[in-house]
Structures are given as structure tokens and as C-alpha cells.
Image: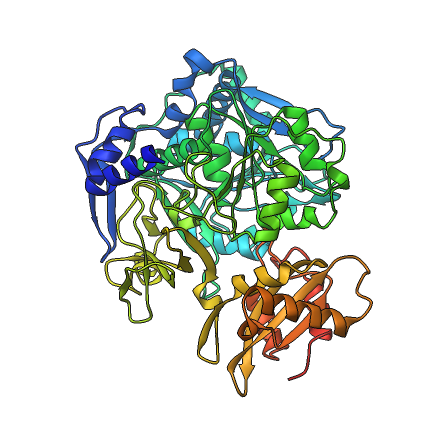
Length: 631
């Protein structure tokens, strides 16, 4: 704790000197001239200006001398009967260089945008790193988005090159990736080349002159006898990737991250939050299509010389013991997953954990949303056997890396709290008037008052959108869009999106807080809470609740029990006005609950739900509409 306080104080007193010390440990082609130049008005943030580097030299090349034979990536396939694959740092280097030659051979140059739409195979990581090696800007799209969503992103980035697979395996599903790309490309005639890797052996259409097979292109490189690929020398502030995140307007925002700052911060946050020790196996269960996969499957672990485990499947297939089997099989030391996954696995009880040792686990982590206390306790006792610290990490696509989290075994954990900021991160709470709240035991809007190295640089092709979304709400601050509570010791608890805060009879109530209370009820698997117009209170609370199994014998009594639970946990003011039991919630494929849809249903706007194509199960929306309470 003392070391943390010392580092934090140093990072605040002189951020440039603090980050310069950390950046000095990396491999640079040319040292930087100026560590930091910034303002949050335009906004304009530049780190390590004048420096030259290539991130792949820091993720691969520099480890070859001492870690060449160490596993860089362990790949666990969807089907447990299929053999897993291990790529050492030397093998990863060879494959990345080889595919970099393929990209160059197919006309990809520095600054070109390359869209990657693949399943969770090692080829996805290889494609990402090969793009970075040739200086192309990669834009990974999660392998579950619709053709329309892909077309929107391709048009926004004007990506002329695509890397995809014939298909992907996910649980019992075969996802036809190439067919979806073909549909997307009807609206994108500017695309010059589609490189297709083989995974599912699904019959696909290959268009002459546009589509080529990954394997055929690799053979060409082998025939030419090309091996090493000299990495493109990049400026510190050159874009590394674009990652699209949903915007409030419906049009996706292309978040841009820069080469040097992103590298320095993901490495620093990975090593410190997880207290990574050399030789450990780090298993982040996210998809590389999301920022978590970028930062904590690929760039953070590899830049640290770690072993990163990639998983193609889902936690509940072929049964709910899959995660635990993977942990034991590969002797995983760090498990980093989402509260959604934890709650889903909780619903199966402890039987899937029976006979699994899990003794290799040293650190547990959560990401993506605030974790409720019940799920935290289950994770701690059943999975971690009460010996593994849990890091509850708060961050965003736009922040590039973890900003607020306890550091495993170093700073104290507190259930349902992200706790303290990392060194270099300056959070503040702001009230409705935009005034900074200095005291503790308060709630407010979470903002950041100074830049960290991996802060968003711009939204691709539309800097004004970046300014208005993140920097215009409160002068000279980055506005996270989240609300937070700060306790008497300065620990932060994220209370949910600010637009998910309800105003009930003049009281501000965070939906995450109400959900946390509902989820404490023994029979509840998960819940989602939204506001709806209420004649007396202004806003009422509408709760959608997924209840365990077929045990819902008396609906009315169960509703009363849940109301009692909420009253006990928060107080009568937070009791839901309406509780609707549902079999599932509308979620994106990353597990995010689409509260926008639930809000529309609660408000009675049944014919104005909006696009449901990106949902994991669009059918659940119809079921919820049918069961809706009338006003």
C-alpha cells in the first residue's frame, strides 16, 4: 500500500517524469523529445512526441532472446475434443512476419485501414499484430455483428482491406463470417481485398480478383523464401487501431488509439493490476473484438512477455464447467472475466465446480460492468477458495486500459467497489452544476481531470464528435458518462451510466444499485432496472427479473419477497413499482444489457424499439413485450 501511495503521489506531482521513467523500459527506434503536451478543450493530447517505435517489436521481438521458447499464446478451441495450440514467442514472431508479408503483397501500406472480422482463433491475434507491424490501422469487428453494422464501420473508416474466416465456432453455433462480409460488401464497393482463413470449412463464395485464401497467400510467401519482416517505424502518435463503440445517436463512434501511449499504459496497467509474475498463464475470457481483448489478451500481456490464453468458445458449452476445466488443464494463474459470465455460471450452482482443483489460480478479475456483491462473494469463495484477490476493474473503450481498480494483493479490495485510481489517473466527482465535490461519502458524475497515456485521441474522421461526447459536458475534464459513489476512504463504486440514474421523488437512484439489491434475492439470476413515467414520483422503477429454474410458484409472493429485499438493502424509496419476470434479457453478444430497449418497453413504446439485429437473442424482446405491465 505504501508503494502504491508513493507511486501515486509521484505520478500526480510530475506526470511527465513518472511516465517517462516507465516508457524508458520499452524499445524505441528514436527517443521522444517531449513527454506530454495536452489540453482538454480542443481536445488535444500528445504523449512521447518525436519518439519512433513499432509496438510489435515491444510485444514480440524484444522477448526472443530470453523468452523465444516460452508460450506467448495458448489457444483453447471451442470443442474440448479438438487439440489446443501453443505458439511460442519465436513461432508467433515467424507467423506475424509471414502474414505481414502477405499484407504488403496484397497492397496494404502504412495508414491503410484493415477491418478484421474473425472468430477467436490465433489467426485473429496474428492478423492484429501483422497490421501493426506494417503500420496499417486495424479495426476489429466482433464476429457477431450484422452485415449492416459492418458496412457502417467499413464506410466510416473507408477500410479497403478485410481479413476474415469462412466461419467461426461458438458453442453449438457455426457463424457464417464470410457470408456476412459478402452481404456487407454490397454497400462497400471500395473494398479491394478480402483475405479468408479456413476454420469451419463452410462452403463460401470467393470472388475472383477480390477474395484470396489466407493459406494460399502464406504459400506464396514461403515460395518466395521471405522470413523476417522489418517493422514499419511509427511516430508515437500514429494511430494504432480504430475500435467502434455504440453511440447514443445510433451511429457507431470510431475510437482511435495511438501507438506509444496505448502500449505504455496497457503494459503498465496489466503488470500492476494483476501483479503479473513471469511465467504465469493469464486467461482473459473476452473477445478480441472488444477493447478488453485488445488490451488484455494481445497488447498488454504480450508487451509484458506473458503467456496469454485465448478461448474460442463460451463458458457454458458443452457444459457450465468449461472455464474450470480450462483453468485446471492449462494451470491458469489469472482469470479475468465479466460479471455477466459469473452470474450465469452461478445459476448452475456449485455442481460444475465439483472435482475441479482450481489450485493454480492466484488472481481473479472482473471487467465490463459493476459486479454485484452476491456475484463477487460467489466468485471469491467458490472459484477463488477465499485465497485469490479479486480485482474489480473500471475502464472503457475510450480509456484504452484499466483506470480504477484495486491492485491484486497490494491495495485492499472492497466488494462491488472498483476502489482506487491507478497512478497517473485523476478521477473527480462532479455535481449537476459541474462543480467538483471534494468531500467523501458522496455520489456524482465521474470525470477525469488530466490525461493518462492511453486516453482516446479522436473519433475517426470526426474530431468534433470526440470533443462533444467526452470533453464538452464539463470544461477541462474528460466526462466518463458514468456515475460513481466515493466512500470515506476514497474508494470508488461505479453506479452505472448517468443516463441510467433514476430520479424518483427527487431522489437519485442508480439502476446498478437497485439491480444489485434485487440480485441479492436467493432466486434471482439477474435483473435490469429502467425508469418509466410515473404520475406521482416523476419516474417509477421498472424491474425485469430472470428467476432461477421453474421455482416461480407464486409470482405475487415472489414479487413481495424481492421488494422486501430491496427495502432491506437500499430502503423503501428504491422499491421497484413494477416487476416483470422474464426468461432472459436483451443483450449484445458481448453480454451488455440493452437498457434502451427495456426502457422503450417500460414506457409503452412497443412499436419504436429500434434495431435489435445486434442482440444475442432478438426473440427475447417479443416475449418481454407480450408480458409487459400496462400503465
